[in-house]
Length: 130
Image (cartoon, rainbow, N blue to C red; front, side, top):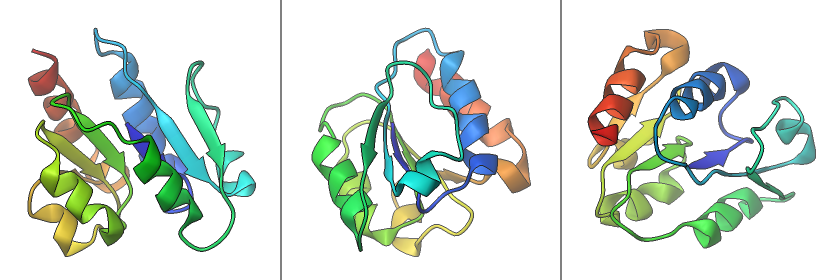
């Protein structure tokens, strides 16, 4: 799971963390952003937290942390810079954002749990958990 803390706030991140905590498999979590954005949340133990300041630095850190595999990918960001990454990922992809770039919506399930509630998120997690 990749979280852009600069791009998506706690009201959207917290439901994702709760849903992932209920998954039977261990989930790799990488979060990046400015120190102020990172401080808005309590991150779970084992989360890799990357403080990144400056234009596109958080995006670059998340792209570098990405593992290309067939595992499910949760991308908590609406930034279109991740469109190619999401499109080329061979496993299922979930985008969590209030205003995702159209390029992200083409090849992924998209949800905004802060507005829609947790239904889509929980259904996606159940589907990929088997």
